[in-house]
Length: 285
Image (cartoon, rainbow, N blue to C red):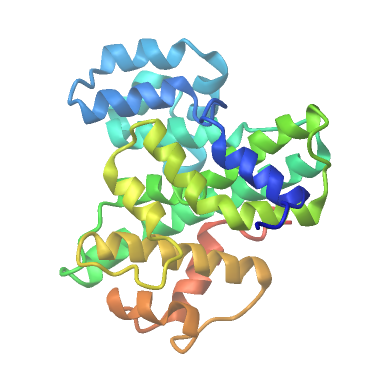
Protein backbone atom coordinates (compact mmCIF):
# COMPACT_ATOMS: atom_id res chain seq x y z
CA UNK A 1 0.00 0.00 0.00
CA UNK A 2 1.38 3.39 -1.00
CA UNK A 3 2.02 6.00 1.65
CA UNK A 4 -0.23 9.07 1.33
CA UNK A 5 1.45 12.02 -0.35
CA UNK A 6 2.57 14.89 1.85
CA UNK A 7 1.80 18.52 0.94
CA UNK A 8 4.93 18.82 -1.19
CA UNK A 9 4.15 15.54 -2.95
CA UNK A 10 0.62 16.68 -3.72
CA UNK A 11 1.83 19.96 -5.18
CA UNK A 12 4.44 18.13 -7.28
CA UNK A 13 1.80 15.70 -8.56
CA UNK A 14 -0.45 18.63 -9.46
CA UNK A 15 2.35 20.41 -11.32
CA UNK A 16 3.39 17.25 -13.19
CA UNK A 17 -0.16 16.43 -14.27
CA UNK A 18 -1.28 19.86 -15.44
CA UNK A 19 -1.06 20.81 -19.12
CA UNK A 20 1.40 23.58 -20.03
CA UNK A 21 -1.22 26.30 -20.02
CA UNK A 22 0.70 29.16 -18.41
CA UNK A 23 2.53 31.44 -20.87
CA UNK A 24 6.30 31.19 -20.42
CA UNK A 25 7.55 32.98 -23.54
CA UNK A 26 6.20 36.05 -25.27
CA UNK A 27 4.25 35.21 -28.42
CA UNK A 28 6.38 37.60 -30.49
CA UNK A 29 9.59 35.80 -29.49
CA UNK A 30 8.03 32.45 -30.36
CA UNK A 31 6.77 33.70 -33.70
CA UNK A 32 10.20 35.11 -34.59
CA UNK A 33 11.79 31.75 -33.76
CA UNK A 34 9.20 29.92 -35.88
CA UNK A 35 9.83 32.27 -38.80
CA UNK A 36 13.58 31.77 -38.57
CA UNK A 37 13.34 27.98 -38.37
CA UNK A 38 10.93 27.90 -41.31
CA UNK A 39 13.39 30.03 -43.32
CA UNK A 40 10.60 32.54 -43.83
CA UNK A 41 12.25 35.34 -41.86
CA UNK A 42 11.66 38.66 -43.61
CA UNK A 43 12.81 41.94 -42.13
CA UNK A 44 9.57 43.73 -42.99
CA UNK A 45 7.43 41.06 -41.30
CA UNK A 46 9.70 40.93 -38.26
CA UNK A 47 9.52 44.71 -37.82
CA UNK A 48 5.73 44.68 -37.89
CA UNK A 49 5.61 41.73 -35.51
CA UNK A 50 7.94 43.21 -32.91
CA UNK A 51 6.33 46.64 -33.05
CA UNK A 52 2.97 45.08 -32.16
CA UNK A 53 4.18 45.13 -28.56
CA UNK A 54 5.76 48.46 -27.68
CA UNK A 55 7.01 47.25 -24.28
CA UNK A 56 8.77 44.26 -25.80
CA UNK A 57 10.22 46.39 -28.59
CA UNK A 58 11.62 48.84 -26.03
CA UNK A 59 13.08 46.03 -23.95
CA UNK A 60 14.68 44.50 -27.07
CA UNK A 61 16.31 47.80 -27.99
CA UNK A 62 17.60 48.16 -24.43
CA UNK A 63 19.13 44.69 -24.56
CA UNK A 64 20.56 45.32 -28.02
CA UNK A 65 22.39 48.41 -26.85
CA UNK A 66 23.56 47.14 -23.47
CA UNK A 67 24.51 43.57 -24.31
CA UNK A 68 25.68 43.39 -27.90
CA UNK A 69 26.84 46.81 -28.96
CA UNK A 70 28.92 48.44 -26.29
CA UNK A 71 30.97 51.17 -27.93
CA UNK A 72 28.96 51.20 -31.15
CA UNK A 73 26.42 53.73 -32.36
CA UNK A 74 23.14 53.24 -30.46
CA UNK A 75 20.42 51.15 -32.07
CA UNK A 76 17.23 53.21 -32.04
CA UNK A 77 14.82 51.19 -34.19
CA UNK A 78 13.86 47.54 -34.54
CA UNK A 79 14.79 47.73 -38.22
CA UNK A 80 18.32 48.83 -37.34
CA UNK A 81 18.54 46.07 -34.77
CA UNK A 82 17.58 43.42 -37.32
CA UNK A 83 19.91 44.79 -39.98
CA UNK A 84 22.89 45.09 -37.64
CA UNK A 85 22.39 41.97 -35.52
CA UNK A 86 20.79 39.46 -37.85
CA UNK A 87 17.79 37.19 -37.33
CA UNK A 88 19.26 34.82 -34.72
CA UNK A 89 20.41 37.61 -32.43
CA UNK A 90 17.08 39.40 -32.76
CA UNK A 91 15.34 36.15 -31.76
CA UNK A 92 17.72 35.90 -28.81
CA UNK A 93 16.94 39.49 -27.81
CA UNK A 94 13.21 38.86 -28.03
CA UNK A 95 13.44 35.87 -25.69
CA UNK A 96 15.80 37.70 -23.32
CA UNK A 97 13.46 40.69 -23.20
CA UNK A 98 10.37 38.57 -22.60
CA UNK A 99 12.02 36.49 -19.87
CA UNK A 100 13.50 39.52 -18.11
CA UNK A 101 10.07 41.06 -17.61
CA UNK A 102 8.66 38.09 -15.65
CA UNK A 103 7.45 39.46 -12.33
CA UNK A 104 5.13 38.57 -9.46
CA UNK A 105 3.25 40.50 -6.81
CA UNK A 106 4.43 37.89 -4.30
CA UNK A 107 7.79 39.05 -2.83
CA UNK A 108 9.20 35.53 -2.45
CA UNK A 109 8.29 34.42 -5.99
CA UNK A 110 9.50 37.74 -7.37
CA UNK A 111 12.85 37.25 -5.64
CA UNK A 112 13.18 33.81 -7.24
CA UNK A 113 12.25 35.22 -10.65
CA UNK A 114 14.80 38.01 -10.38
CA UNK A 115 17.58 35.62 -9.38
CA UNK A 116 16.58 33.19 -12.13
CA UNK A 117 16.70 35.90 -14.78
CA UNK A 118 20.14 37.10 -13.74
CA UNK A 119 21.48 33.56 -13.70
CA UNK A 120 19.90 32.52 -17.02
CA UNK A 121 21.13 35.67 -18.74
CA UNK A 122 24.62 35.23 -17.28
CA UNK A 123 24.77 31.62 -18.47
CA UNK A 124 23.67 32.74 -21.94
CA UNK A 125 26.35 35.45 -22.12
CA UNK A 126 29.12 33.19 -20.80
CA UNK A 127 28.11 30.37 -23.16
CA UNK A 128 28.19 32.69 -26.17
CA UNK A 129 31.56 34.11 -25.14
CA UNK A 130 32.96 30.59 -24.68
CA UNK A 131 31.81 29.62 -28.17
CA UNK A 132 33.62 32.57 -29.72
CA UNK A 133 36.82 31.97 -27.76
CA UNK A 134 36.88 28.25 -28.43
CA UNK A 135 36.39 28.93 -32.11
CA UNK A 136 39.47 31.15 -32.09
CA UNK A 137 41.63 28.96 -29.86
CA UNK A 138 40.68 25.47 -31.01
CA UNK A 139 39.33 24.95 -34.51
CA UNK A 140 38.10 21.47 -33.55
CA UNK A 141 35.50 22.99 -31.21
CA UNK A 142 32.77 24.51 -33.37
CA UNK A 143 29.85 25.98 -31.45
CA UNK A 144 27.38 28.50 -32.85
CA UNK A 145 27.63 31.44 -30.45
CA UNK A 146 24.12 32.71 -31.13
CA UNK A 147 22.49 29.29 -30.73
CA UNK A 148 24.33 28.51 -27.51
CA UNK A 149 23.28 31.91 -26.12
CA UNK A 150 19.64 30.84 -26.51
CA UNK A 151 20.44 27.46 -24.97
CA UNK A 152 21.85 29.32 -21.99
CA UNK A 153 18.63 31.29 -21.64
CA UNK A 154 16.59 28.09 -21.88
CA UNK A 155 18.67 25.88 -19.59
CA UNK A 156 16.48 26.57 -16.53
CA UNK A 157 13.19 27.33 -18.27
CA UNK A 158 11.54 24.63 -16.15
CA UNK A 159 12.15 26.85 -13.13
CA UNK A 160 10.48 29.78 -14.87
CA UNK A 161 7.39 27.72 -15.61
CA UNK A 162 7.29 26.29 -12.07
CA UNK A 163 7.58 29.73 -10.50
CA UNK A 164 4.74 31.07 -12.64
CA UNK A 165 2.64 28.01 -11.83
CA UNK A 166 3.34 28.18 -8.10
CA UNK A 167 2.60 31.91 -8.15
CA UNK A 168 -0.90 31.03 -9.40
CA UNK A 169 -1.26 28.29 -6.76
CA UNK A 170 -0.26 30.71 -3.99
CA UNK A 171 -2.75 33.28 -5.26
CA UNK A 172 -5.45 30.58 -5.30
CA UNK A 173 -4.62 29.57 -1.71
CA UNK A 174 -3.50 26.06 -2.73
CA UNK A 175 0.17 26.62 -1.89
CA UNK A 176 1.81 28.68 0.85
CA UNK A 177 4.79 30.86 0.00
CA UNK A 178 7.11 28.53 1.89
CA UNK A 179 10.71 29.15 0.82
CA UNK A 180 11.97 25.64 1.61
CA UNK A 181 9.07 23.91 -0.13
CA UNK A 182 9.30 26.10 -3.23
CA UNK A 183 13.04 25.50 -3.43
CA UNK A 184 12.63 21.74 -3.05
CA UNK A 185 9.94 21.58 -5.75
CA UNK A 186 12.09 23.61 -8.15
CA UNK A 187 15.07 21.31 -7.58
CA UNK A 188 12.94 18.22 -8.14
CA UNK A 189 10.98 19.30 -11.20
CA UNK A 190 13.20 21.80 -13.02
CA UNK A 191 14.46 19.45 -15.73
CA UNK A 192 11.28 17.41 -16.40
CA UNK A 193 9.19 20.57 -16.57
CA UNK A 194 11.79 22.29 -18.72
CA UNK A 195 11.57 19.39 -21.19
CA UNK A 196 7.77 19.66 -21.22
CA UNK A 197 7.92 23.42 -21.87
CA UNK A 198 10.39 23.09 -24.76
CA UNK A 199 8.30 20.29 -26.30
CA UNK A 200 5.06 22.22 -25.83
CA UNK A 201 6.35 25.21 -27.77
CA UNK A 202 7.95 23.06 -30.50
CA UNK A 203 11.33 24.67 -29.88
CA UNK A 204 14.12 23.06 -31.98
CA UNK A 205 15.63 19.80 -30.78
CA UNK A 206 19.08 21.24 -30.11
CA UNK A 207 17.62 23.21 -27.19
CA UNK A 208 15.52 20.28 -25.95
CA UNK A 209 18.60 18.06 -26.07
CA UNK A 210 20.60 20.61 -24.10
CA UNK A 211 17.97 20.77 -21.34
CA UNK A 212 17.69 16.97 -21.18
CA UNK A 213 21.44 16.58 -20.69
CA UNK A 214 22.03 19.57 -18.46
CA UNK A 215 22.52 17.82 -15.10
CA UNK A 216 22.94 14.13 -15.99
CA UNK A 217 26.22 12.35 -15.30
CA UNK A 218 26.13 10.50 -18.63
CA UNK A 219 25.62 13.63 -20.74
CA UNK A 220 28.24 12.83 -23.39
CA UNK A 221 26.73 10.96 -26.33
CA UNK A 222 28.75 12.11 -29.33
CA UNK A 223 26.07 14.50 -30.63
CA UNK A 224 26.37 18.22 -29.84
CA UNK A 225 28.64 17.36 -26.91
CA UNK A 226 30.61 20.61 -27.16
CA UNK A 227 27.39 22.63 -27.30
CA UNK A 228 26.02 20.93 -24.18
CA UNK A 229 29.37 21.18 -22.40
CA UNK A 230 29.54 24.94 -22.99
CA UNK A 231 26.15 25.51 -21.32
CA UNK A 232 26.92 23.13 -18.45
CA UNK A 233 30.30 24.77 -17.82
CA UNK A 234 28.81 28.27 -18.01
CA UNK A 235 26.06 27.36 -15.56
CA UNK A 236 28.44 25.78 -13.07
CA UNK A 237 30.91 28.64 -13.40
CA UNK A 238 28.24 31.22 -12.70
CA UNK A 239 26.98 29.22 -9.73
CA UNK A 240 30.53 29.27 -8.34
CA UNK A 241 30.68 33.03 -8.96
CA UNK A 242 27.43 33.60 -7.08
CA UNK A 243 28.70 31.49 -4.17
CA UNK A 244 32.12 33.13 -4.16
CA UNK A 245 33.86 29.78 -4.68
CA UNK A 246 37.15 29.82 -6.60
CA UNK A 247 37.59 27.18 -9.31
CA UNK A 248 40.52 25.50 -10.99
CA UNK A 249 41.22 22.69 -13.42
CA UNK A 250 40.89 20.29 -10.49
CA UNK A 251 37.39 21.38 -9.50
CA UNK A 252 35.71 18.00 -9.81
CA UNK A 253 32.27 19.26 -10.87
CA UNK A 254 33.64 20.79 -14.08
CA UNK A 255 36.49 18.45 -15.01
CA UNK A 256 34.57 16.62 -17.75
CA UNK A 257 33.42 19.84 -19.42
CA UNK A 258 36.90 21.37 -19.26
CA UNK A 259 38.44 18.23 -20.72
CA UNK A 260 35.98 17.96 -23.60
CA UNK A 261 36.38 21.62 -24.50
CA UNK A 262 40.18 21.43 -24.20
CA UNK A 263 40.29 24.21 -21.61
CA UNK A 264 43.35 24.18 -19.37
CA UNK A 265 42.86 27.48 -17.54
CA UNK A 266 39.62 27.29 -15.57
CA UNK A 267 40.60 30.17 -13.29
CA UNK A 268 40.86 32.48 -16.29
CA UNK A 269 37.40 31.37 -17.50
CA UNK A 270 36.06 32.14 -14.02
CA UNK A 271 37.60 35.63 -13.92
CA UNK A 272 36.42 36.56 -17.41
CA UNK A 273 32.93 35.16 -16.76
CA UNK A 274 32.76 37.27 -13.61
CA UNK A 275 33.73 40.36 -15.58
CA UNK A 276 31.46 39.89 -18.60
CA UNK A 277 28.37 39.17 -16.51
CA UNK A 278 28.79 42.40 -14.57
CA UNK A 279 28.87 40.64 -11.21
CA UNK A 280 29.91 43.82 -9.49
CA UNK A 281 26.84 45.74 -10.68
CA UNK A 282 24.11 43.10 -10.42
CA UNK A 283 22.54 41.87 -7.21
CA UNK A 284 22.37 38.08 -6.93
CA UNK A 285 20.32 36.60 -4.13
